[in-house]
Image (cartoon, rainbow, N blue to C red; front, side, top):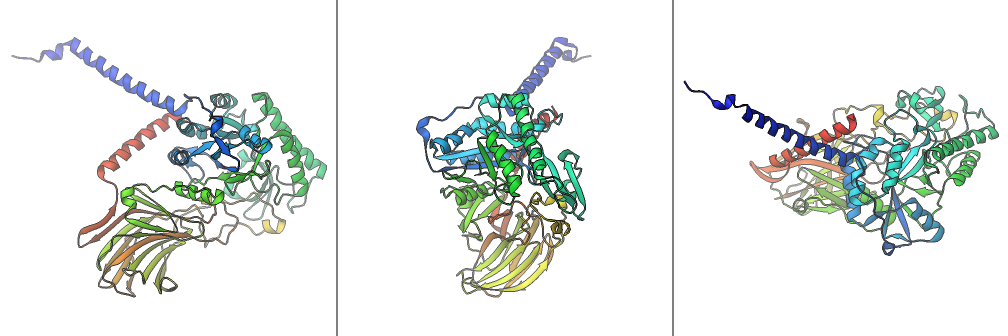
Length: 583
């Protein structure tokens, strides 16, 4: 009779246990190290030398509402933030402090050649966590704008004085203020009903309020929008708000922040009531050294008013080239755009914009108010199939065009506001004829998808008009998610959307070979109240595959190994983010 001695060898079993425990501890230590690097400040900011200060013209200012793990309709993802800031660093942008801006305007002290004032709004804890490593890696400094009344709350979304002080001491952060509190006044709902004044935390559903002012924007008014306080009472109320703010910052930090960014920009010095404006103006200049009051443009020249500066609030859905295009247009600096994978990009010729290409996605960004086109340089035969996914915003025109080899004739298909239009374009694109029009299956969306500029000036009659949601329009941030199939054979084109045949049209011209063009352009909306409207559009196309007789002519999709590596990377990030958000 034989037996396995190793079964009774307790030393061997213990040794295996020790090895297993050591391996687990090593993994745990590694994970803890990664989390520490992801959460805590481990480096110190290194200021630029004086010899690098050569710019006497101006600077750009960028502001992010917030940062989270994967991105939302309001907050940018940490991955996209890191990408945008890394590209700016590569382009030569260096961050500047509040003091540098003050010295620039008051003493003419020069700035870095491409100077960037970087900031984050609302004093959010996740913005600090998810942006910290990018600041350390790039040696960037940022301002965290905060609300004074959030310093003593138990709400974990907001940074507390202890954490803010640690951030300031690292050199990577400066303290700024959005004001004392976020309270809504003169509120009306979508039915025109008056709701009065409500603290932000007491608003259960913000889509339920249609018109409002911020606490500092106007007189307190009644249900007919008639002031219910005198001018001295209004001045006392606004003055106390600034005094409360001052007392909190003095108590927690021993001094006031130098920089202010008033809530709901563009009203002050624009359409605010003159008496309310005067009250704000007095207190701002008493307590602050600079003020970012506007949020439409990025660039500030040397002739700007230091109390009426620009900061561009970066929309979370902007690809990096959209941001670069916006900065270039505002500043007139010539920038280099991101092309992505050069081998893939070389297959396309871009007009009126730029393109970024990777293994499964094409992002075409227009020049302001123009239509971008990307022409596949490879000629296609008279019979082919093409499939791809359209992911650009619904409120725009995503185009896909079949063009004759001589470039004189086109069959142009455009997805515009969830309607598929097919045009015949001739005479070198000077004339177009609508051949076919079809509204596609409805897209599910809710009022939460809208981001209205609700905090504005209005009268009683306006409040009675009710909701500003136009049922025939769509939110600017709403994305297409349409799969397109094109089959060209025997001079007829079959068009399928989401595997459903939509149309079959006879080609209005014949050619021995064809070219495929992808493109897009912005659609001007009638509704001027919505945020994030600009003249730049991003046409996003994924998973392009073109075939002819079972032969692949062109393909942009991920290999299995790339998909696996991306999945592993995402899983790793999810584990780290789980610990960050849980503990």
